[in-house]
Amino acid sequence: MTDHFSNLNYKDEDTERLINGYFEKKRQQEREEKERLEREAQERINKKKKGKNLEKKVKPIQNPIINPINPVNFIPSDYIHFEQPYSFDIAISEDFGSCKGKDWYNQNKELLSNGYLMSNVLEGMTLFQNIVESYKDNKKVLFDSAGNSIKKGIIDDLYKFLTSDYNIGSWYNMNALFENRNGIWIMKEAINYDKPKDELIFQEKQIIVPITKDCYVNFNNLTAEGFPKEKHSNKTYAQGENIHYWYPRNGCVARFLADSVRANLDCDWDPSNTDSSLGVHAVRHEVKKSTGGSK
Image (cartoon, rainbow, N blue to C red; front, side, top):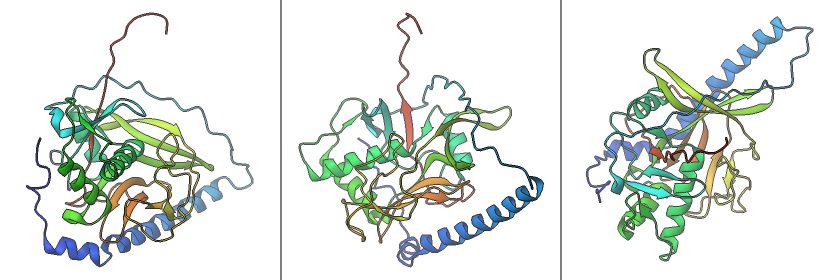
């Protein structure tokens, strides 16, 4: 199995940046700018639609068909396989091609061009839940995509990587772009890429967002899309027991971040943001052959 930690270069300035709350400050600046733009956009809408009632219902969402995906250079030992909540393989590493240094849109384009998907919120949280459980309970065995058990040393490294600033900590984009349409939350996932038009094709889902407050949450109690349903009783970070959650903001994407302060599920990041440390978890979905019969 590939050693996913020995080849990483960790710079002192990166660690210092995390410790000094670089990401907290940057996120606040992006959120303030996003809120300013939203206010201005809303003012323009109000002027155009003055005296008219806004439609409260969202039009039916038309979901494009997901084409079969054939990953390029798929190495089974580099992926963890899950059967629940559905069958998928997720990369152990957050490095994929040249994705680091690209924004959310172009990361998706590179992954899809090679036959992979970016991990969505549910897949990312499934990985997190199972790594924590396996770390705490030796009887909980995880398997790679070839059916071989994941070594304890890999599990231990992943646990520390996903819950602290071990090896500068985890930081990756998730396949979730949020839109609030007249009070209804829509999550868009990039599922295909039209290269001639240079356009991403999205699948849209109407989602429930149970918690609309930034707080610590129970990561074991999630919606069908992977969003927390329950605040945690502990209002400070407890490694392996809770995570901090930033609820969705309009026009933002989801990311997972672990640093010296805590582990975070952040749904309020600007998709155009780039960073040389911002990675992805590539995902392969099993394409089942049709057995015939009625549809």
